[in-house]
Image 1 (spheres, rainbow, N blue to C red):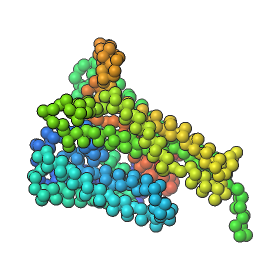
Image 2 (image 1 turned 180 degrees about the horizontal axis):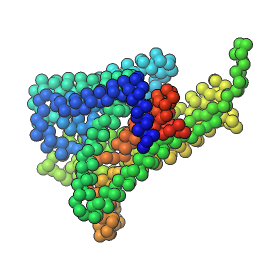
Image 3 (image 1 turned 120 degrees about the vertical axis):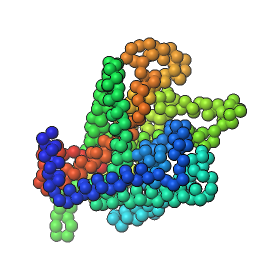
Image 4 (image 1 turned 90 degrees about the vertical axis):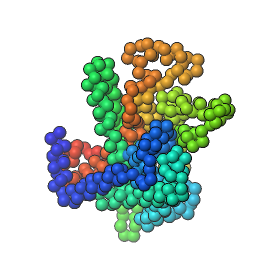
Length: 472
């Protein structure tokens, strides 16, 4: 702890670093202030009733990444979700359109163009999303039915999202850390006090079983955080050699370097994709419920099935984990092109020792990437499933053939009775939240440590080691 406090003191001694940190904290405070400003024309009582019916839908996913702003329909209700979606789309577009790929490879100029188009796409997505939000609010009686009420919601929420996007960019340029990631981080952290309050109430109840449950929950969360830090910092270094070359009258000696590949190159994106896809059926049913007078219709039977399709349901968990694995492979295939990496190595005179340049190098990289992606996909599925199991349980009664007998066995067995129903906490601090919190914290600390080491100060972990963020 002494090294940590010394690092904090050194951090505050550096004028530029101190200004960046205070600037970042100030803009985060502005972001949280906007969470308490409700959009005009909102019926708060009716909104609370409606939210109790749709918390498990795609709207619940939006609320997670908006830091609870969507629950109250504040001016920052959509948060950074449209910007994240637009950024993901712009990452995938160069694969489909070679002209965008060429622009992306133009260096700083190309990056600025792509960023500007991302902003334009964010505004367009905001208008579309806020229109649907306004329509949903009207259908549920939260706002008036006039076109003026719809216009006010569209303009307010779109403007709020653009302002949040600007805040994130200002933090990235003039503060410390990635601005958009820090805004999501702040939105998730704000829910920690309520979680701590629930845990303290369980401990203070005097029930030994409740106290043991809290200890078990905390121990599992600490172990998960340690696992996330370990995996996110892990690298598979591939040795790269560069042959000697002569340019004009100068001869450049051969160099030995390495190509670091992360185990989890997809980050939290596959989990976000999977959560969004699985939340769509509930969102669809909330917008188009079946006829109550004809519950045995095809639409009614589908609706009845998906009423139980949420965290803890075996079918939900199976599809959720499968989608995480699928999206992990899909996303990494898009962002890391082994043929392109092999071609760039060959152009610059680089090669992997023992592997011929060209197609064999691409095949070699593809083999390693497949193995790493398999481990990374299983890791993401595990991290996403364990917190959901603790909080929501695993409804084994829904399993065919053996479900009822297994459920009766677990319910009657002390120490295992929580498995079908979960530990009974009302907060949801899932794997997605853990991945974001730990990843953003690692990125921010690594940037601060780099600034300290550059100025001959000792970092948070001492002079012998240095924390590597997700992007290093």
